[in-house]
Amino acid sequence: MLINQKTPADACGLDPAAALFRSLGDPIRLKILKRMVGGEVRVGDLTRELGLPQSTASMHVACLRDCGLVEGRSQGRSVYYSLSHPELMDMLAQAEVLLAATGSAVSLCPTYGPDGTTAPIIEEENAR
Image (spheres, helix red, strand yellow):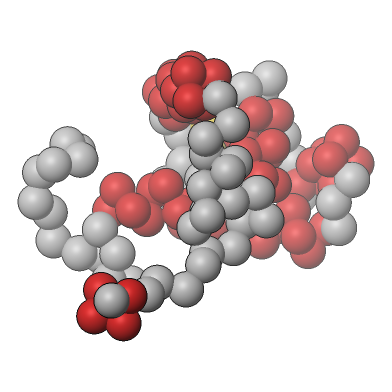
């Protein structure tokens, strides 16, 4: 998908590109994806390796699976998760290059700063 290409909104009302970046916008999900670069992983492995509660790890893996970024493979009573599209790691590597180039500009952004919250948007008329 091209970012500047017009596409129909998904069921949640988000442009697919916005939905993709939203799914990647959580530090825990990024840690899970980076872990999957090393190979398949079970939710139980993520709880131990990342120090997450089982419910938190499951919720984030479900989000990544629902977005089509990871897939599960059942083996006995276990489900092993892996990256659906290894190209995702290429994109994340390019994001790291961009972050290195911008320095601390992203973390200093008043709208999406380090606390991960968004500042209220002030309408142009009210700003005058």
